[in-house]
Length: 76
Image 1 (cartoon, one colour):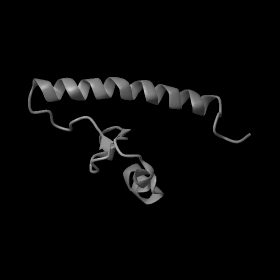
Image 2: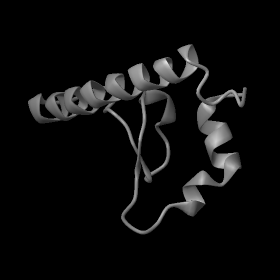
Image 3: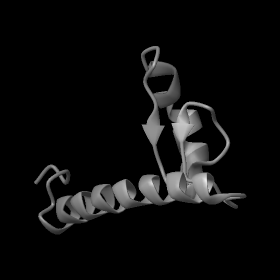
Image 4: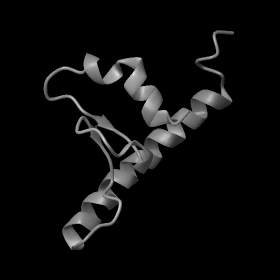
């Protein structure tokens, strides 16, 4: 099942406070509460904004990778 569909089913989006958003990758395009890079930037501004979002995304991915390496969320 795609991550975006799991996110919708989990109710996570309904638990956000007003003004809160989720930063995600392009796989989550489709909900206004989820901020994603622009799939096909049409101009320099859109390209730059997508670049900024992507540059923050890889930091999060590296942290999650560390969680997996050290089994932080495994419960063991």
